[in-house]
Image 1 (cartoon, rainbow, N blue to C red):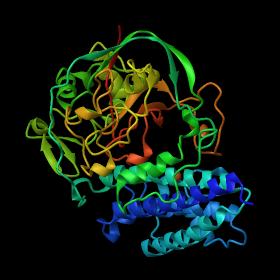
Image 2 (image 1 turned 180 degrees about the vertical axis):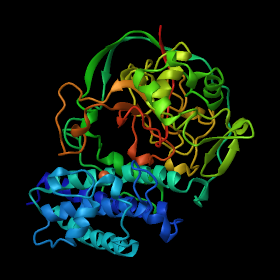
Image 3 (image 1 turned 120 degrees about the horizontal axis):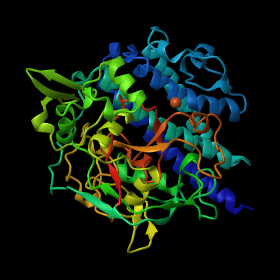
Length: 476
Ligand SMILES: [Fe+2]
């Protein structure tokens, strides 16, 4: 007799297999415009050559096959060494800054490896529902797909660092601003439920089985990919458990800080005045000779911004949120402006709480999945940040714009475990719980299927090659 859990596993298997195909194909779509020489170059210690991402995301699934597929034969010991990132549990690996120091494995060999892993994985996923440990396996495959989506975003950062406007990105026209968005929203304090409400690894306890087996997904429809993702109610362990925090009344910017506003800070001597900076920030300013965000260039007495589309006068980018600033720069700006950065709890309340409903929603606009007109995420294919006011439909209950998409937003919160945290995956999130800051909301490079308002991203305070911006807050 077929048990209920076997039926659920069979449905999950079909959905996971579908999601697997789509996510894996997307990675190859991102790198498609690269020339063969581009794949192996490492331009900085913090970035990785595209070949490495292609291999590493496959390595992740090969570790699943090694552990769970009876009789699986390792593809190559050399590949295990080259494509492991930081996992101590999987043995020796090449040091991160050295990923661009070798020409082997070749790009062709790496793609062959990827294909091999995909073939093995599709057979493997097809056989999982028969097994007693089906749920554990589906959870780790699901994690592998989230991991791959994280690497898709990293690929965008790294390709930008490698090629910027030399990369022939398939850019769609950016939407125009529909309204002026200024000022700060008032948010009432009190008790707030911070974090994701689910309980177990990737699935709410007691939820009904995910998608019905006959669900119709059109090929290439990103909306359905999101539907697949939501069918599993996935959230990382670091977003859990939901817990009660107390907030004072506060104000938060209705829009992220724009380039024009950041330029005012620069013109006022912001990078030359120690008073605005944390000690670590002032040290970096002097050490690295910071004078502007990354990708800003000074030509003919004018600041210009380079992105995937080319080099632009600041005039053309005035109304776009500033990006490629570190936490240290964001904090200095906020102090200069007489404000501060929000805590992650403040950010999450402003982004997700609906006062009329008296509860949280998945996104600022409600529970509907992100669509073309709600937020600037990877599927919009802008390859850049949209002007403030371009996504009025994505506005939060408090009137805050563009909290999802465009730029990750720095918060003042340290990346640390929530009270009651339980690690669900070895060496994935918990080993990073020191010295980093939380960013919220996703960027134009984040896949729609990968973001929600409880998502906690984290980077070191000085990092700025990712698409990081900010909005300010203030005590009421
Ligand atoms: Fe990774």
